[in-house]
Length: 429
Image 1 (cartoon, one colour):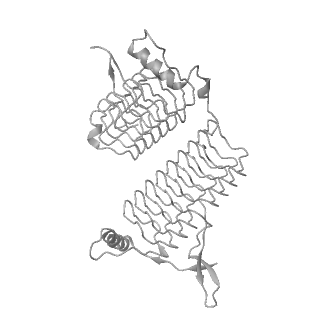
Image 2 (cartoon, rainbow, N blue to C red):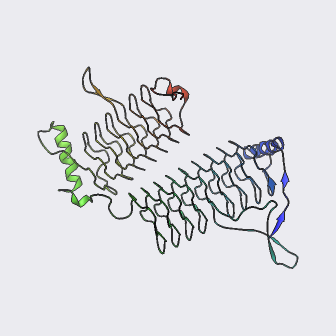
Image 3 (tube, rainbow, N blue to C red):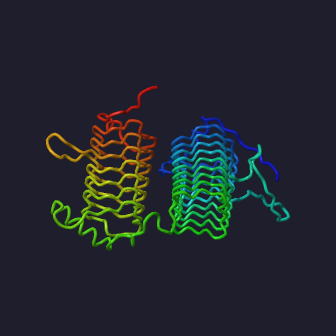
């Protein structure tokens, strides 16, 4: 393997190249696509820049700052990306074959349809043979060991054969991801959504998959020795199955609506505590006021415009559920998992009982990472200790909401939305 010398540029020279690339992206005169093949860009700053379709083949970007950058369809083939900062970056359909991401931070990055398979750069000799080359300075073998991909979106990405030992995939979205023969030993995949992922022949020994979603995943010849699968959702029912209910769910929903409408004189209350409700279609637009569904599994369930006032949903699993337009005034969602849930326009404010009493929505300790809360009403809601990292709070009403010890890293909202909240900004130690 022969080394190839690198071309080093200053920050000022790089800024000029990127400005021309951004002009090219906007179809402006004087623009030119950034071709930075076999460059040394170590430690330079590309934070938030538009580098979609740029060519970085064989370059070294060790420790480079790329947080929030747009790298869609960029070529990063064979790059040295060790310790690079890609937090919140967009790498949709990026070519990362043969790239070394050891220790890189891709927290919250979008890598939908990205190609992270193994690969080598080769040059053709005069006699027609191929000679493998690498960037001068010695990039390490292609791997993702120790990288941070928590909350990253890797749906449909190709990671077959990737070395990802000790890599953090906590709460990552990996729907349909190709992980054939990937080395995931001792990796952290807690809460990761691996629906339909192909993990055939993968080595997952010693990995943590607590609360991971493995429905529809292919696990043929997958090595799972010593893996922690506590609370993982598979194709088998989690908790009590639907057929453990005394009557069909559709009938019970109707009886509950009658119970609510008659102030308890007719019908019967609906109790779904600990029931696995995945796949049901009986709850959309339903009257579920005062529903009891503590620790229920409602992963991916459609609850669009449901009436859920004062519902008891503590510690339930509502990840990826659809609650758009739902009325959740006074509902108890303490410690509930709502990552990637659709709560657009939902009403999570207080419920007025009389002139002196109100019941506020309880979301203390709830997980709302990447939840869509745009246009929602959260007035007086208790969000103490809630994780709202990367949540969409655009135009959400947060007046008098309690955000004590809440996490808002990467959340989408305006500063003026926090004017009348409680517990924000956090008190200095």
